[in-house]
Image 1: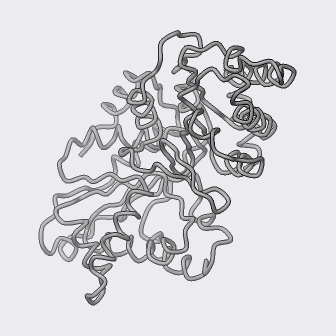
Image 2: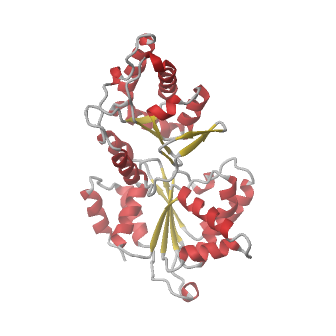
Image 3: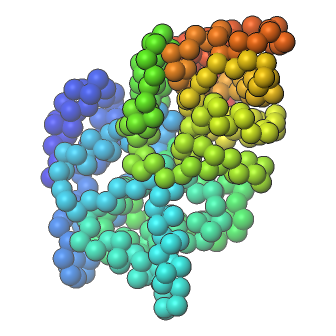
Length: 357
């Protein structure tokens, strides 16, 4: 049994003072009846809900609170996944076991063997292949006696909106949802935006390493593995440092060297809650097409109120472009870059994104 007071104290030590909604969530998590698993577990115990589905606005601390709860449990029978990593693993295992009867059952048993809790972060069904199996997978995990904790930005009724064969998906997942608690984390402090603002190197002449950036993203977005290095935009593949449901990390030099266009930038600005851009270099008129692409990207993301974290490698903003042919365009762009780094811009755009939702 976990101790709510210890969890609250630990969060305070991290600089997060839990609000009323977060304390309610902590209490709900602590009320989960977690037992050690053994054979015939599910037949012997009727131990309440199969888990908890936590949803709410971006940055409200869903992952932060859940991880604090799991840390307080301090058990070796817990598995944590980012949703994308989980589904990648499931599809790989299904391919391996494709020749047997009911491969999903075998995969679920392997996944839950000696595991009492599975935590799935950033649950957001978008792919039809995932949608056709995720409900059955969650039901099978639950039948093994493993508790499931999910975090999502969407209410369960809004999952997989406008997706192919959505009715089949809903019929499957609703059976699972009937047996879990659904908990909304109400609005309040956006801890993620606050932490990103604090992680500020714009005035530093030091280069922030990729390792440090990834550690920061992992801690604030709950991504445990740096796997994805490719993004598909308008049916074309581009390299990236990391991609998740709601974040994208690209490198200035690599991405804007490619022949990207306005429609690509519109896709990015509409798709992702946060964009991270690193590996800046000074660019002169020999690479004017590259700087033109970047200016177009900033124009579109600024107009769309996108939240971007820049890592300028100690380069002053006004010195990123050192040429002269498009000085007038760069003056406007550098002004916008300076504004997009400010607390006022980022917090204001957080409010705008909530209002759009």
